Image (cartoon, rainbow, N blue to C red; front, side):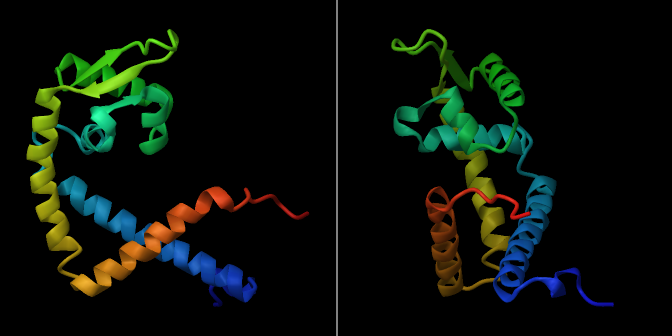
Amino acid sequence: MTPPDDHLPGTARDAARTWEALFRTQVTLMRRFQADAVWQEISIREYDVLFTLSRAEGGTMRLRDLNESVLMAQSSLSRLVERLEDRELVLRTVPPDDARGTLVALTETGRRMQRTVGRRHVRAMEQYVGGALDTAEQAELTRLLDQLRSAQPSIPDWRPQD
């Protein structure tokens, strides 16, 4: 039996194999991360929101910008942010320049939670990634992934050719 990508031209086959390797690696690592004893206080999705806010200027982002940085539907994110606000981990406000918008900000409690959970999560990353790749390999992979991500805005959307 021939692999399903054998009919593709070389560059398409290479891109497909690269994407498959990247995707399968992410799935494997995410399953390990989700199973870790890191998520007692908050879920991995909640942590993603707190982490993303921790990297934002002043710990604050518009909800629509936050939505671009996390992998979930807008409605799911809105409900998750509501739950985080109920737990006093974030604060929602209306921006002065856009009454229809929503600003989401880390509270001090949210910042502490992100740091506490983040320290444990980083130790797991060290185990799973550092256990497979040395420092130079990690730097090279980071460089390549940053290059792949930063190139996306300049690459046109794919359209079927038929």
